Image 1 (cartoon, rainbow, N blue to C red):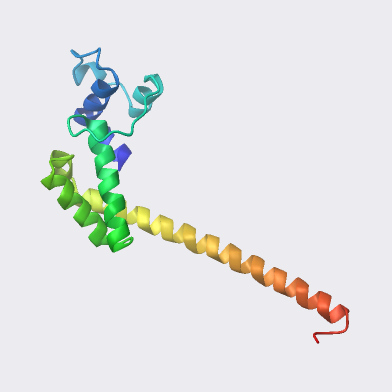
Image 2 (cartoon, rainbow, N blue to C red):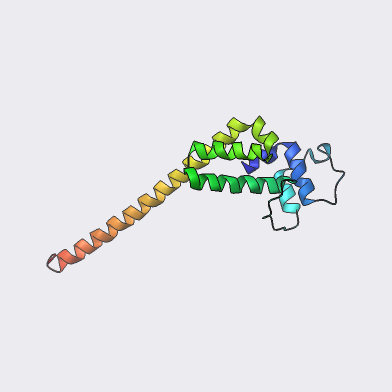
Length: 149
């Protein structure tokens, strides 16, 4: 969602201004050829952990925290995503973005669930495969020593 949010020049401008408060006169036109990567690479290293509804970075952090709370409550479900969006819109956090791209955000977040679940299943499969290999080695060793007794 981060990339999707900041592909929009309006939100990219807000990010630029949050990272470069000294450049208060910059406009969307000034950054028309600038990418999110350039803004982040050129920015000074800052600790981005404060919730600040007045700036785009703080709003994104709030969104992530709300999402984590809802995921703990509802698991990795569409309900967690839709509740996150509802809560954030009610709190005026990324409200305009979420209202204009709500379905896209839901789709992005659900794709992340799918990717996470695939990765978790793959990790579980590797773990199970290693357990089978260990059991097989143990069985071969025991059979070589005269069996299980």
